[in-house]
Image (cartoon, rainbow, N blue to C red; front, top):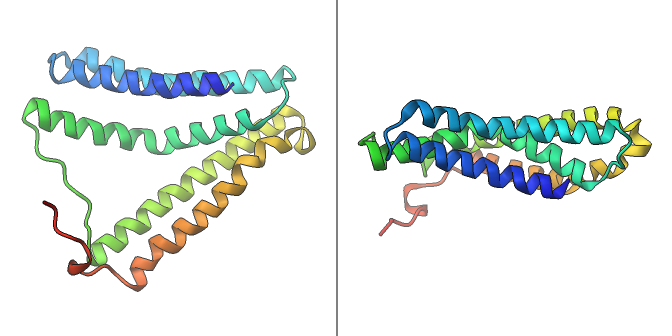
Length: 182
């Protein structure tokens, strides 16, 4: 299962880069769009593989939990990551507008950090929902306990991210706090 997760991650980047290179430097927008559709198809392959493995009596383990986390991240953030890369490729190779940087100071920065944390929370919730589905496929909580081992460290990270992200609401960064770029 770990090998499949790694293959899906590599495949995501291969499809993303192939799609963007085909779309912009090679000027083949339709073929580029088709290649970009390959990235989410890998999620379907991973989801189906994990579900089939558990349904057929495979031992629920850390790898299945990691698959749920990977799927949650790509479902929630995959489109944003593809859009981020698309804007940069369009700017570099097709004369598109320069990417807009997120705000670095003040209330706008605080609002941006809160939104980022909410995306993190949504990813966490999607992963928990996938873990619940995997738990049902595995035959219950007793058989699926190892799946949930991925959530403990992630919960700590989520709480730390909450504190940091919302601290900017209480004490926003001032313009002097960010060193100038050279």
